[in-house]
Each structure stands twice: as structure tokens, then as C-alpha cells.
Image (cartoon, rainbow, N blue to C red; front, side, top):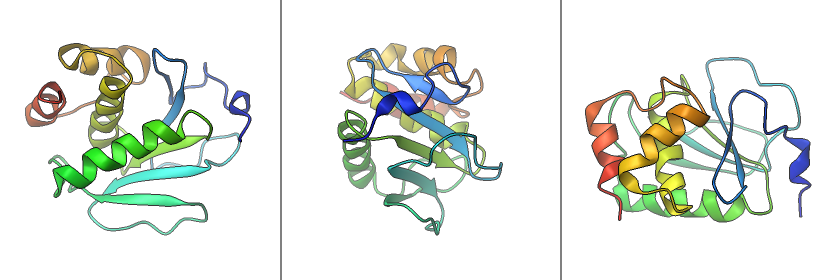
Length: 143
């Protein structure tokens, strides 16, 4: 079991879910943030990344929705479950659209109502999270 206190919940990029679980969102186009590396990463990209820690890739083109929504839902569930005992990172190229959408979907798994999840992530992670209307609808349609 990882010591979750090694990620400071007040550090930018860390989302605290209502349950207290912590997730780190980031853009892969920026340098690695300070602090420990993730134990697991969920990467939302058009092609798989090459990283030095356990990860899962969801094919997700920029400004769009996941290519396989069933796979994406399974990946969100895995990230949420792992976040109970591991440092989990979610990332796309910029850290806003796809990452914000995935964080909002995971917030729904954690109990945030789907209609409120985008606002929750924008308030607690990044005000630019979830960039397109179809990404917002994708989150709202989770049930």
C-alpha cells in the first residue's frame, strides 16, 4: 500500500474527490511535476505513451471522445479503485479536455451527480477542464 500523504492535496493538479481519494491530472506536454512518481497512470491519447511505471492507455483523440467508451468506462473504474491505495495520475497532452473529462467521470463514480461533475472538477482541479460540449455531455450521460 502506498502512503497517499506523499502527494500534497493542495498542490496544483491534485483533485481530492468527495471520498478523500486523490488523483493527479496533468499535461504530458509539460515537465513532470515535483514529488513522487505515480504508482499507476491512465493516459488518454491518440497513441500509447512510453512510461516507466504501470499504466493503461485509452485511445482518445484530442478534442474528441474515447474511441471505445466501454474500455474508457472500465479504465475510469480501475483508476478510481486504485486511487484508494495508490498514487494515480491521469494525463493527456494538455491536461485539460480529456484529462478533465476523465476526472469528471471518476468524480461521478465517487458519488458526484453527473450534472454537477464538470463544475466540481473545474472548481477543484482546473477551471479549463472539459473543453468541448460533447465532452460535457459525455460526463452528464454517465449513470
